[in-house]
Length: 342
Image (tube, rainbow, N blue to C red; front, side):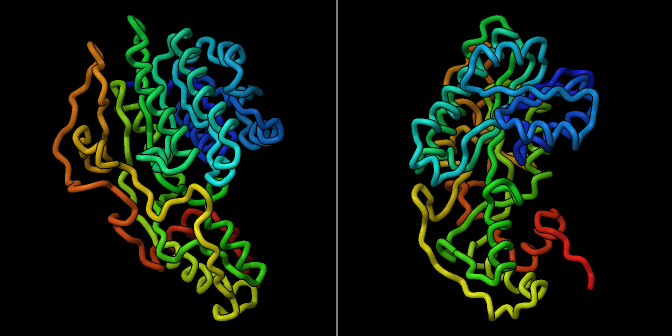
């Protein structure tokens, strides 16, 4: 268990949707310094000026470069690993690149963390890693396994490695809400893969809460899974058309919905916990904890426990949000621009 006050923190992918929020929270929680490690020069420059905190350190580099990571991790106490290639369809067509970042990059970071003997290491994962059906999901599952197994590589070091796994985050890069919003703004059509497709969803603040909670609760080897509501893609599209079309001078009936079918690598329903993971799953009030399946030796945690799941934890079986609940979540999260009153 590692608190952030007075600590040296490094966030890989720190300019991304999740990473940048982790950076801000770490500063708010009293970190001595926060190093943002990212390969996007423009976004590093923007983040540096937006935050404007003298404790912020912007490091340009790529997780594929192990030597750069070793320099970046000198004297670091806490690592949050958010760097990844995550767009499902693009990853299907570029698997070599996905493996280099999501798998080799994670391995590089683990090795550097062990060499520098950091206190804690939290990797950000995805529902697509559970029994994966895509290149991105498969590489994120391998990333998870590398992180969990790192606990058996550490020898006498006291570094703890764990993962935080969650579903779609409202407003994150490539998420469907901003896409639907722009399509409505332009008069349609709103492109829907399949109206009966379901997804997990939560505001970005909840995702960051899980990541920070993981850092505080972990003993090493766990995958922490936040309990999340779900939605139907068709319900989301209809709700957003009804809510936002009038803001741009359209009647909801003016906006067409175009069915385009699933994209490569997409599945009908996402899952956060697979059937194979159920025996090692423990339920807490706000999340599930998947304990390691491998023998952790002296670092072992208590495997399994009571839980309410009678099968896989999927977006088809989760608590479904209504149209009004979806709009309330979108508006309160501020993921679409507020319209000026006329």
